Amino acid sequence: MTPMSEVLAVCRVHQLLPDAGTVGVTAIDKRPVEGPVKAGRLGLYADVQADRANHGGEDQAVYAYAAEDAAFFEPELNREVTPGLFGENLRTRGLDVSGAAIGERWRIGTAVLEVTQPRTPCATFARRLGSPPRWVRRFTEVGRTGAYLRVVETGELTAGDAVEVVHRPSHGVTVAGWFTAWNGGRPAFAETARLAAALRAAADAGELRLSDDMGSRVAKALAR
Image (tube, rainbow, N blue to C red):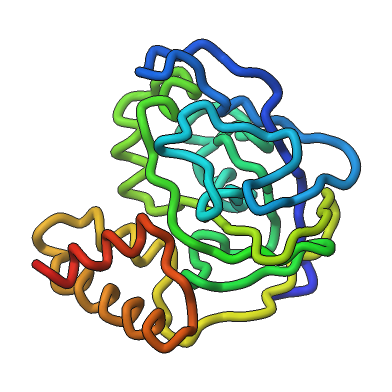
């Protein structure tokens, strides 16, 4: 954590939009809101998810994305990546969100949030941006995924709040590191297994609680 680590914007759903996916609508249209927002076990107050089979729940209660990662994509998209455009709840500055360790905890306002897993891009995300060519593949290749978080201490947070890293596990597995290895195909099997073993050992030692999705992927990586 640096003194400049802060929340630039707190975003929640503005409106449900029609979508060509199986659900028929999407809640990806997140926009900044003013004033303090309550963060509960299932996310920010008044925020929703349309596709609850793949989004939301305690392990994906809040999605954070760094301004630095957003700026990286602006030349490629030929547009400003405004807060909330990628569907994030928190736009941060001065914090390496994609480089956060899985299980890392942040204090923001009166809430404490824990990094659980990377964001996996989908077709809805591509449609949100006007379907840029190869967007899902490009987002995956770059590894600037942002991070899903669970709320371990409920509270209120607001734009301008500092982000204080209050716990960082010793296993060394980052959100981007895991995502890149997991999506690297057969050449990355050995690296994925190494990272999975580190996460499993940390979980067995009580250093962190793996999300259901991460637990399943770790098990698959170790069984290869």
